[in-house]
Length: 597
Image (cartoon, rainbow, N blue to C red; front, top):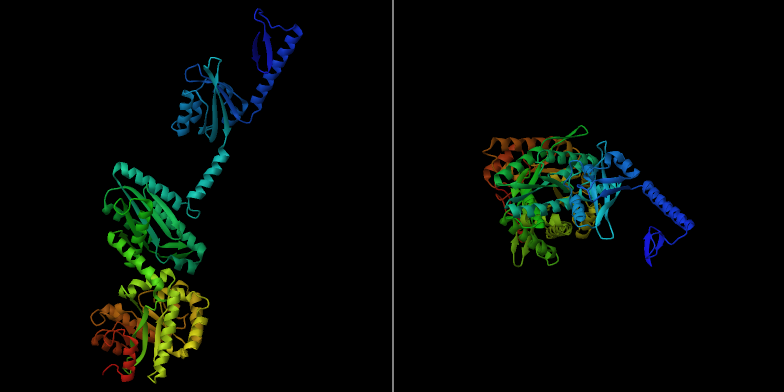
């Protein structure tokens, strides 16, 4: 007996019979059962929420043979409009999708495949369809049809795109973030290897941006960052990438740049657009930027080294005056290595008692006598020798070591002045430079009180010096802390006056006793009319506010005479003495040396 299966029913055929060996009643029942199954299957296809299509594999172009109602609703095309067409008509002009090629290859090989395709509805709107194609074979394994199921995944794709946007783009500016930037740099390097082109990174940092946040608030700071981001995008080519790393740091990725001259032109354009005034809620803000540049392959052969070296070059631009750009060089790399070495040693300098203080005399121009000293930090390393403060003080600031070092300076200087007093030497003040990080300690005033009690020094002998930039960083909080220090009897001096903001408005808010004129105005005071005019103006302004004036960097008798005639109160500089060790100071006080004449 030969058995043949038809759908879910079974018909038993006898070898010598042309008809099934069933009675008429059974035959009718079986046909009815088969029809019912066929009807249910057709109903399931029509009721499906997914689009279902059947393609004729035996006709040229493999045209559509059948579409269900869900396909009509999904695409907007009726069955009459779709049947007979190549199903690729849904893709419109977008025939280059990678998943489409994967689907076509699978059909050529006669296997199942899945793809997600960007398709067009009849009204022109776009949707994402996830397509599953499966071949239909005869008993002889010939493919006669393909059955396709299309699921509308537009909403899912939009959610995926949003998640990808959040993962790869900055929430504030919409620019690519570090993750996407790193990927694009890697792609650019791969392309550059094939085409022998350069890849250029410009690392951009806004100068004094913290001042904007502190003065106008973080919301306005965010508004400024959005404007800066738009300016950067607008002045770049479409092929370039502008990314935000965080805070006020941006990176521009350039490809197909053939000369350093062209790179410099781009950097100058960036500096120009970022230096334009920003209007934030009717407040006009003016900022500059510093730009560091690294180039593949000469400055690095991977993403990490290119970013690191561009960052190093950016800091060099800040060191040389800001509002400028700087290319990375091997010399800069050596400096970074030296800086890393210094940082490692600096972490142990205090514990190993390698730090010491030198003292530079301050002289009263009226009496000619020493009226105080400025305590200046020095580092005597056993193998590196005497390390210049220019090399390590900024490093101490960046690493936070300045907090402990600053405490040590105050403690040591106060104890030294008290020791001189205990020897019966003339009473003098001691001036100590404060860092911004020290002033940000809410318990700083209590710490100073404890040091004064411990050393027994009269608070009126202690002077704290601050630069204008430190004061302006957080004016309100700084002013309050300085008032508390002033109430203890400690004097406050503004250092490097004339090189920063020099605004009467902030001077009126601070309990300042003295201002120090920066050396750059003193150097050529007798020959340069502009320097002379600035110095006279500073002295006149200070007198009007009942403040004393100290000139630093006095090296010539002519400078000294000019300052005395202009009404300056005090001076310090090489004309009288370089910074010296404590024993030399003790000798000066004991001998009563001072200015002659």
